Image (cartoon, rainbow, N blue to C red; front, side, top):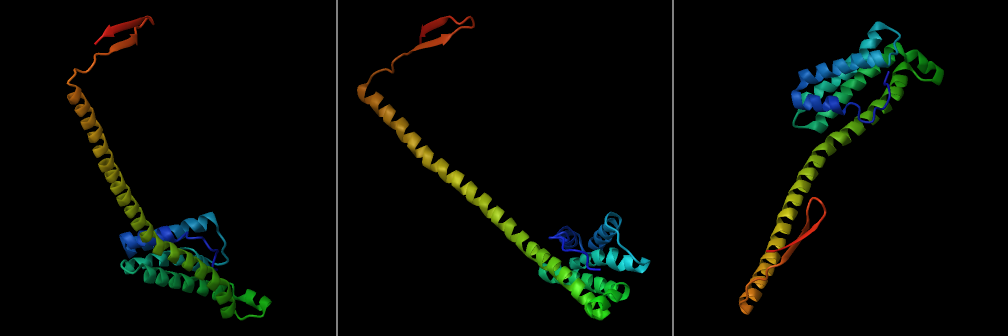
Length: 196
């Protein structure tokens, strides 16, 4: 039955399906479903295991058929995932609906619908935001490069003018630059002064 909202847990499977195609996406989903079965098992019948674990995860790989339309691919994949959980709910958990005054179809819809819909919405938002984040990162890098280049252009003219001013001062006085005494310490810490 529906499971829980994974806060985007199917996004890696969707990305694999979009990049590598539906076959690899379905294989990755099937593998994820089997791993999920071993890590968090709950089953009442062997057929129910198929409809609650590998098949819904495998369905996420169907998004690979819609590489150029990620919103549509995500929606189709989650709809098929919902169908798998809905069938499981009707066939294997429908009897619990009597406790709440519902038929097995309505019970399965009420339990599985909101969970799969919430997971779909979260994954859809993430899948649609990922390209925008990539574009923003690229724009940020471009802006940083432009800023660094413009800073270099601003700094260089100032330095060249300062150098020109110093040359003009020296040329106006027509003096030789003064020789300075250099002070430094030797290895044994004695002060040595030399004329340059």
